[in-house]
Length: 257
Length: 360
Image (cartoon, rainbow over all chains, first blue to last red; front, side, top):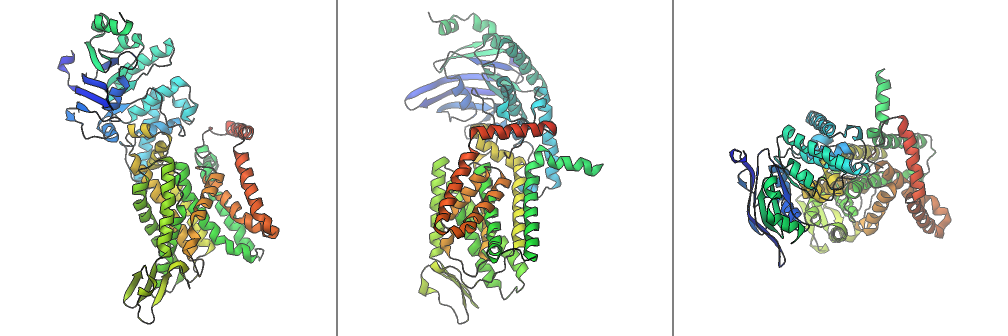
């Protein structure tokens, strides 16, 4: 089924060195339109490093990243977001001094644009655009069950709500590809169950592809259509959840011999 | 019915900080005007009115930079200096063309603000590539550089135009020419055209600019870049551009403040805007509360007036000033006091509106 779809993201022979250490090497993967893909691997395998390369927080040493068919070699972090990649972070990174609503509003920075001059002079364009931002932000908050918290400080939210807010903020940037770095970390089984439904809903409602890093195998095997396994910075296996589960190499990497 | 609905809106969490700031400025202005007209204000206090307004405007600008944008700027006085000497020179050279003081004052303040903003952008290019302590040190250095430059600048004007030099005796002017800048002596013989009303209007304008900016797309971006740089970039906010906006607006306000300040005295020496002035402005901002504009206004008024009020104590006045500073710092950082204030706030907000106030 995925064969008929267009790839949003194509990664070819990606690699990065830190000093003499090669953290990721020869890494290949695709994410197709409307797909939920998973990236798994033991601790320290380089999963977050891959995310940081995809968003250009780290500049890859080797290889190419094609996003929407375009080479992204010269793009910066900000330009990658404008191109359509949004992400969440393993250790939550919210704007702690801003309200929940303002956190989501900030996500519209690159999409609903007006100049600071229009803001200072309170021009009609300011009013119209601010109304648009507010409406869309509240809509996002209600999808993620955060509308009650709109005026609270983001740092005062409970952990699970902070994770949801991070996803809402990322979606506000209108991404074609959403990268989720351990979205279920620290969640209890019931919250994880809700998160799985939410990720599916995000894919269907916002028409984005999703690539997620996760240690919770129930979540990964439950919602991912294709899984890539990373070990010691190298791709170990790639395939459907069934293929990955029965792959002896993967079992060996996770459980040892 | 309509007014009933509007009043609570002004008191709602979103506007409370703004209402307090504007109200505090207008109330202060009214009281002082009445006192001036009834002759209840000593000449010492009357002479302090314009400088206080200037310091408030510069401190509001600095609060945008330090409190909202989160960059420790130790060179705010240099932008005041640029604005002051631009305004003094312009006003001096336009004295014959525009004899009316008001249009000349407005034009001079605009010029001072503009030139200071340009300086802000130029200095911001290297400075904003740094972070934290390094940024603070470089702003301090630029403050000294600008002070030294103006201290060594000689500028005269005659019928042939401007004459400029960094060495005294090379300014060869036709007879009837006028020295605008005289090196370390600064500007002398300036016509004093600043007024208290102009100062109050400038404060209100500064507040409008800063608040309108804070509650907009750009303001949110500035605060986002302060709170979490990496996350801000990940949602498509260019950090440099954003910080630059805050830095330029901050310098622009300092320039306007400096212009008003310069035109309030017949002589102005470049040494006036030294490192101490930058630190004083920073003290107003920190004691008033980072990001809290009303606090900045109150802190500035109190801390400018305090040394004057304590004049009768002679040798002890700076000691008392220092003790008051330390006490305020201890009290505002006291945990029990903080929780107590928070409780009061909660009780207050539980009755009306939500508990969100970005200014506190």
